[in-house]
Length: 193
Image (tube, rainbow, N blue to C red; front, side, top):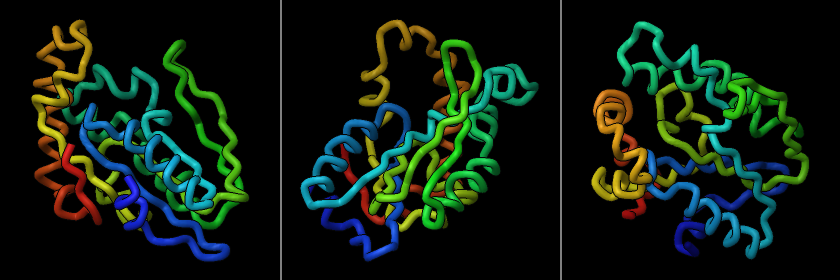
């Protein structure tokens, strides 16, 4: 983890560094983020972590929309434009963010206020971070490269039973991302998981 932390640009006085931890589902992003955050804290940096899945849209905007399932997952799961404008564009200039955080219990959103006034580094973790609409806002991107077989084995046995959802929704969207955005090639660093 120290090698990854050492590769991230060092924040200078008054300048935040925005780091993306990109990877396909179940590639180990959350685990890496926790270790990286601890390593950066040891170096004396203040770190704020954001999970892109906290900002998905309501179910009726991403399921049964008339589009193919993979399209819904890639293009409709998040309001890509709103996240660009209300989150990514503001990361380096604002001291406070107001974001609509998704609550899966009742399929609603609540306003979340995030203070960035003492933050040196912002880590954003999630899938599809290097999509063309978002890529420019990251100073450094780590891509976790993990095989489909390994990632699928990390799913619960119950989740694995719904193989059609993986075939038609998740894997097709992941293939689209890999074949159009080239995340492994465009990342600053690739970590083999």
